[in-house]
Length: 550
Image 1 (cartoon, rainbow, N blue to C red):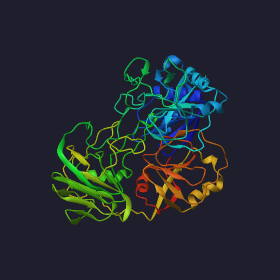
Image 2: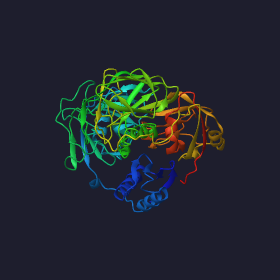
Image 3: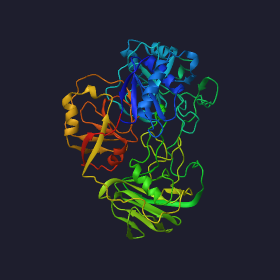
Image 4: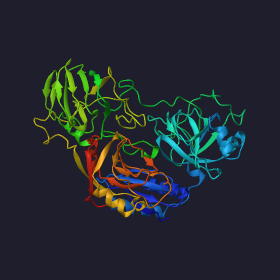
C-alpha cells in the first residue's frame, strides 16, 4: 500500500489510508520493522501516527523507512493476533433504548453483540480504552445527546460502529449496554492494556441468560490473564483492575536507589501540586499520554542545581501557595515561575541550592510571573513508578494523586554529581505577558480557509481561563473551516493545535489525549512548549512559522 503522509509538527507525521483494515496491516508492518528512534506508533481510525526522537532518527529518514515498510504491508489473518474473552453481563442502562433505536429487541441486540468477532482497532480517550470493530456488526449507534458526567469502571458501550469497555470511572457519551469485571488496564503488567491494538475479542455472557436485568452483577471473580502472561487465547474473568493514583508512599517506589526515612511534609499544597519527572514517552499506543513536567527546562535546571540526574522527579507547583516542612536535613532548589520564596522565614533566591534543615518551612508565595514552579530535592523526589515514570497524570489516573495537606513525599538518594558552586546558567523571571511561539505544519491545514491560516499568524491570541495540564484554550477569532463533517479519530502529540467546532484553538499539553477527533491546523514546536507551560490566563500569544525542516 502507499499511504498519504501528513505532517504533525517537527517530530511526527501521520500515515493516512482509506480503511481501518489497512490501518491494522500498516501498523503491524511498521511495528515489525521499527528502527531505533521511533518513539510511538499510534493506530487510529484511518491513520497511524509515527513519532520520533530526532536525537536518534531524522524525520526525513523516518518517512523513507515508513513508506518502505508500508509497501510491504499485507492483511493480517486471525492467527497473527491474540484473542481475549471478556465476561460481560448485559445490564446496561441504555440497553433497551439502544435496541429500540436499532429496531431490535434487547435479547436480539445482546445476541448480536456477543456473537460478533471483534478486534481492537486502536486505543485512546483513556489508558486501556480500546475501540473495537467487527465485520459481523452492521449497526451505527448514535452517541448520547448529553454525555454522562460519570461512566463506571467496566461499563461496556456502543458508539458509531465501535464497542468498548471503560477501564476507569470517566465521563462519556457512549450508550451503555453491559458490564465486565475484567481488569482492562494494569500499569504494572508486562503489557498494561488488556485490549491492545490488534487484539481479537469475544464477549461472553453468562450461560444462563442472553440479557440481564439492569443491576444484576456478575459474581465471577477468578482473576485475569494479562497480555504476554499466558497463551494466545486468554480469558478475563474479573479482578479489581485497580492501578495507580495512590497517595505518596502507599506503594513500593520501584527503581534503584535508597529512600531515606523522612522527607517533605506538605502543609498547604497551593492551587495544585503534583509529582512530575520527564514523563513516560513510548506508551501512547495503549492510550497513555507523555505527561511529566510541563516546563521541562525548569525541572532539569532545578535538578542540575543539586547534582541530580536531570530526569529526577520533583514537585510541580501551579500558581504558587505551597507550604512544606522538611522532616530531615535536605537540600532544595526552586526554578520556573517566579514569586517570593521563603525558607525558615527568610526570603531566598530561586535558581540556587539551599540547605533545608529539618523542621524548617519552605513557602512558595503566589507567583507574580509564570504559572508553574518546580521544587527539586537533592536525591530526587520519591513516588511509585507507573510505566517507567513517577509522573502524575491526573486525566489518566496514573502516578500519585495530587498532593494534599498532611501528605509526606519521600526523598531518594540518587545523585549524579556534587552540588555545583554556581548556577549552571543565567536565569530570569518567565515572560508571561506576551509569548512568541513557533508553529510547524499540522496534518489538517487543508480543512481550513486561507483566511483562517492568515488569521492564525496575524492574530494576537489570549490564553483563556480554560488552561490546565491537558491543554490551553485560546481566545481570538474563529478559524473558519472549508471542510465540514467529523474527523475520524487520529493520533495527537503535545503541542497539537486542535480546532473544535467553535473555531477557537486549543494547544494540547503533556496530559492531553493521545487520539482526538478535532482537526489539527498546526503544531507548536517542542522547544516552544516550555513557554506555554508558563502562560497564565490573559497571556498574549503570537505565532510565527517554525524555522525547522519538516
